[in-house]
Length: 450
Ligand SMILES: Cc1ncc(COP(=O)(O)O)c(C=O)c1O
Image: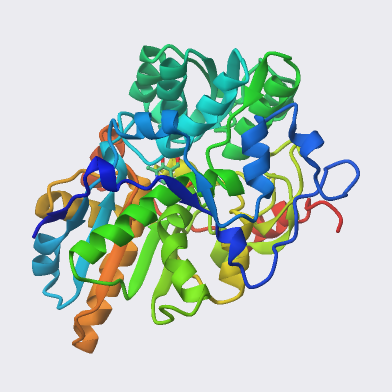
């Protein structure tokens, strides 16, 4: 069969929380001022009550509110496909499956968390939500969710992507939200960066600082977060929970689960339900691979330390593998992967050897994306193409070994707003940014003293 579909009645009604099954607790987020573990009251000005509870919860299963399930049904359950044409093109005995999250109205996995975050804020009477966005996928998802729940949305979009993807902001505006290129003059954090570098391409870290400052300085405004936090990953586990059932329909089980990593939300959402089987001893043979850009190699070259999620250092200290909160990655086309850190749980599971990491350059990534378009038909997001690159590498290794391995990868979004990047690749104009160790060392020199 080509695709494996679940009916609406088979959709998950609970999210899975990996914190219940981790071999050891991850070091908690710290207050940036006191360096004490963050308390719910510290987060209350920024996040809704349920988001704060979920961030700290160790309960294994958490109910998905009926109103959220109702919105999920617009596009969920999403399809699981067998990439048989790609398998043929690679002449591999591997079976390659991909979980296709591009069917959401915003075109990626991001609405899986935008919807519950917006629902909880609307239920608490919040009038406006501010956020950051890299490639624009998260900003679009939040604008979509805001329009459904009648909440205003302000998006700070990393300038490099703002300029590369003008139609992403048209989409955000169409859903009724406002969007500003970041760094902007609207916040002290943005003005400070522009003072030093009027041409700054921006970074997710800077955009997060702007959104945090906006939310913290307006009583009627809360913050929405697109990745890395526990509650965001929790919401994304619908991806993996569905994929588990779909692979059962296929009569298969993955030998390797692969995804791209910006802050970690789509990959952890796909991987954690399968990883639960590894951590609880049910399936110990599955491998897990996180794919990241060589231009922003947090897991492969970052340092495990407490660091801020944002450039200005307003946000809490998170324990993660980081390139330094001041690190500004080269303006690669996979804008959603330009984050200097990763989710704490992902970093801990990488450190314990449960998850491996690989870094890829943009040319090898785009060359797979083009092969995929010409075999499977889908034109995918540059971010997702990192996962694809990982899957192809594994399929070629299976060919080498002569083993019919089962490969599952997350296809987190479509690339319909990324055609300028495809044009650049097809014209041979994409550059691979070598990242000198000196640049990483410089950014790491600014880590908060531990
Ligand atoms: C299509 C797509 N995939 C992946 C990512 C990376 O984010 P995360 O690691 O949170 O899934 C993004 C981020 O914007 C994205 O837009």
